[in-house]
Image (cartoon, rainbow, N blue to C red; front, side, top):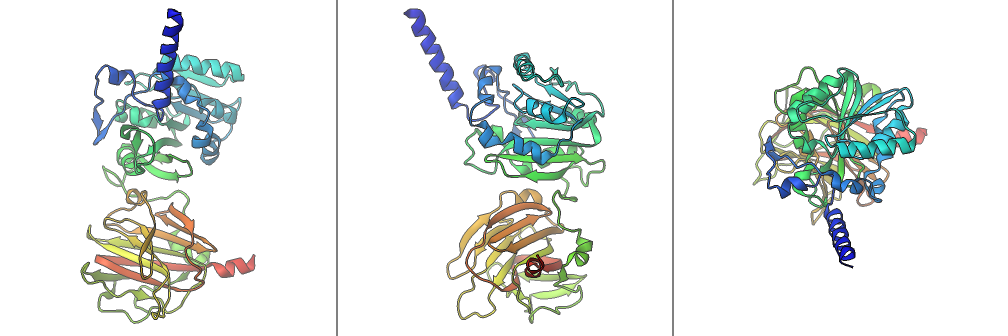
Length: 442
């Protein structure tokens, strides 16, 4: 009986530890020893999860919350590729990748804990996979071959690296010229994600750390419940030594200089207000841009198109030279002001970098993008794409989708209105495509 009671107590404690850990990488023995993790660029480096919690990596709900097959579909891993699964743990992703790369491909599964590699090896043998190479790196040596890796994947791992710069520098050296670095990290922007703060990262923090190491943001997937999927490629000439701008987006619309050939019509000719209703004194045209200056205490009058539009895709660029500069674009605002307008307003710049409000007697927030601040480059031209079709309203910043929601109200047609809110803001390259015609052709 004493032995049975001891076993029951031990089993209960283990169950409580595993249930309490909300995500991979939770601190275990590092915290118990009283070792405080150091910081990197203002971020506390999280302790590595011990192998004692390996069962948690294979939990039953992980397929639903992390959707590994959908992630790998999005990454388009080709047969014959060499993929490094860094911090592979028990091989939750390694085994799936091994099946995708096939017999001519290779998975380099690395983990600093030999116990994890032992479990991974057992899983590979049970699955009949012989294209997985087990590698035990050290904090100083990633042990990856030079210029051989097509894709390096870190799932909930980067935030635990004890020496991020050294490791990422070695990973970059291992990547082929067109190789990709993919980080899957819990969203630090969302306080609802059930995990300790040191195990979450915002997109801005990830970019702030990774891009100065010789990478640029190439793709961003936000379909997971709790995590970002962030794709980087090599950048041999960073725009700046610290946190470069987004220059080339992932799922981009047509190139800005090719919109005319893609069915778009210009809303601004670059020289005057033709196509717009009479502007107020706040508005002027200079250097092929529409410029407005507004006082936050005294709202400026909006600049409205002379034509109204049904379903459309709006593409424009905006810049605010001042940190406090705030602009807005009202979509489908009724020209008749007898009743309150019922359009949607995109607030851009300043403390609210891309939020959306319903315009009316009572303003109501519809959505706010927590990703936009990491994609908008202060003081530079940023490109916005707004697609309003059927019941869907989608917004992209510099080519990366940030908002996708059901259209509020039942309005069918309306005008485009530019609204300076505070400071000096500039608009240029304003184009619109009528999607109604597109639908009629189909």
